[in-house]
Image (cartoon, rainbow, N blue to C red; front, side, top):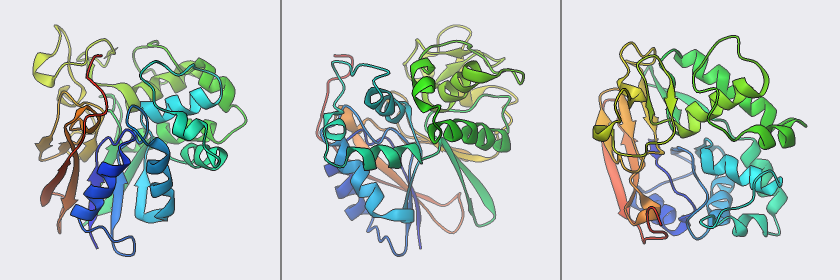
Length: 281
């Protein structure tokens, strides 16, 4: 039995199929975690969702910003943008089954491997959050995704404020901070104020900002974390940190990490991807 994490797929189902073949994936033996942004901008989002659904608990997903955007577009809460490629889902005969499955996926997951915790999110966590906090806050959002309140939440989900966490936050403001941290975060200040304007690599942090994972005193430091979302960051491999968005949809690679007998034993496996969109175009 092997444990894998795979970075942003963004509708590139052929690349996902080739990567699963490359790693020798067996649904009866292995567990694969997909780190969000399963859909959008690539050519076949519906096929990615169907493949994930077909493999049941062997492929475990979490949601990224593009997956939430799909739900918003389906609910009429957000018009698809010029660069969106969501029609394969929105016009699918099994549309309702696909959307129902997406709604059931969390925004964070944890896996215990050889006695160690692996925490997985799409984008990042705020420095004040512990592992338990992160999972609990993700559960708050998932409860809304599965509730009759979903349409109202999707209408109010977009926005960059509040830009920091505060325990007393309630309602839509609270949910928006959780969603933005877990699915959009790259840079923040030392005291956890989030920035959503900058998409540069970690080495090009704007003044006063730093990558979320470099904030001094981050409470999840020391816990092994895997995330995607940051294609300009690319492959990042630190003892307690794995960045796995290697720009598949932009013509980069789709990347998987295979863990060995411990979380410290890692093997990077990649397939090259056909470019589906031009960055910044």
